[in-house]
Amino acid sequence: MSRILSSVAALALTTGIASAEYSLHIIHINDLHSRIEPINRFDSTCSAEDESEGKCFGGVARVATKINELRDQLTAEGKNVIVLDAGDQFQGSLMYSTYKGTVEAEFMEEIGFDAMAVGNHEFDDGPIKLREFIDLVSFPVISGNLDLGAEELLKDHVANHVVLEVGGERIGIVSALATDTSETSSPGPNVVFQNEIEALQQDVAELEADGVTKIIALTHVGLPKDLAIAEAVDGIDAVVGGHSHTLLSNTAEKASAPYPVMVGDVPVVQAYAYSKYVGHLELTFDDAGNVTAASGDTIVLDASVAPDAEIVERVAELAGPIEELKARRVADAAEPIEGDRSVCRAMECPMGNLVTDAMLARVADQGIEIAFQNGGGLRASIDEGEITMGEVLTVLPFQNTLSVFEATGQMLIDALENGVSQVEEGAGRFPQVAGMKFTWDPAAEPGSRVTEVLVAMGDSYMPIDPAKTYGVVTNNYVRNGGDGYAMFAGDDKKAYDFGPDLADVVAEYLAEGGAAYQPFTEDRITSAQ
Image (cartoon, rainbow, N blue to C red; front, side, top):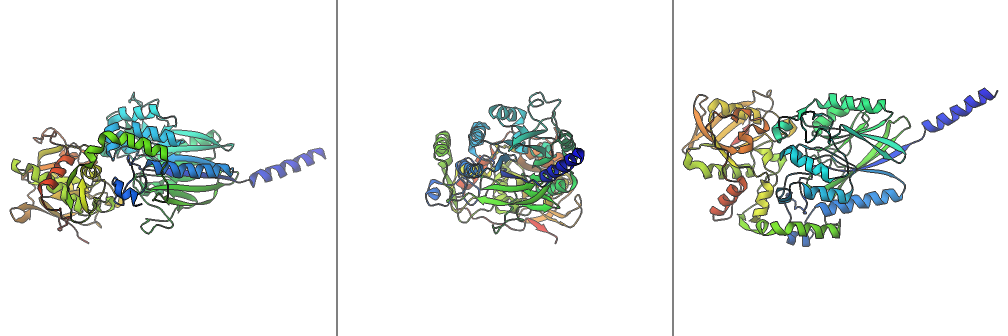
């Protein structure tokens, strides 16, 4: 009888446990891109005047305010909270160009993140700067699809995954980085990239073998790949992503999709970029570790969010040495110069025309005929009115130099095919051009999308000659094979990669124009559909 009673009691206890729920709040950001100072509506550094008029967004001081506000409130209510970053703290402003990651590390420590995914731009200055960043922070920086066995600087410093103890539960965090990072950044030859889905599945299996049943994927691969991961990787309960700068929202007019996007029972979230939003995802788990509910939204950090006063003071201190350079007037814009990634990575854009025209003008006396600029190298728009050097540097923050070289017509055709091969993914390789026009068919298979290429000949355009050699100007990143432009790389192109900084070239071109710059498009790039 006692044995039967014990069994009944055990069943009751088990039933009670099975019905227990566990709630987890995930506060997250992604792709801050060194927007330490507030930004304007064009994602560029906001002026003091606009800040005083309440027109600015974000900045790390507002990020700190909102994260601390959410965390403090939820913690006071007895809720379970973690704070995650999905990568790309590096690159995008003079704060990174000047301090090379130390500023980002300082403020992430101040805010108190629990984990961060490695983003592709964390490799922009090679493994050394990523290692220096990791040494400055106390939270884990993770990426599960990197083989770092041959990279001495990183092999014992970037974990595949991490387990966080939160409210008496173990929360597994797995991670993956886009496999084309060797093309979009500078990880060097010793960092080997593995298939994201296979690597994540292996890490999930390791965590499950250790008894971890609640597993979050913190990724830097872009929304399309995140959706594939959510569908393909068994055991993942949610995906917190970055890389594609996607705004998911239930209220914002320009949102790409609701927050969260559900793939079966797996919620996928992302919070745009540039410090403009903070994401807040609430997950409810049953006792078996299954998600039974997912809700939340992105929160815009507009003027209603008061910046953290101590961080504002520290940012001003850091900005002092570079303020004079940033404030220098370069020229004026008659209208806003569109440089948004959603435009410049998919079609001809006014910023692309400005930059390629400036490149071509700088080297036209060297017999250069064609200019190429990867759309991913254009990082912001510029608003109407005065153009400062700070704005130009926000558009072109990578300190790329002008490169000139020779290429055959066939190489240029191949380059254009590469450029339009991943438009659906919002890839940065999309080509902005000067001295040529081309037509492409987005419905065709990648590799056979370019239907016509014309090269400027005086005041007219003539079909490109695949056998002819042309003089080309681009930035040193593209010339050396970045963004998939392997056809431009090599020592057989009579190349010179050490020209002036691209930002200086554009600033001087604008200054020489005299009158206010009038942005334009002129059918340099047309779609066959």
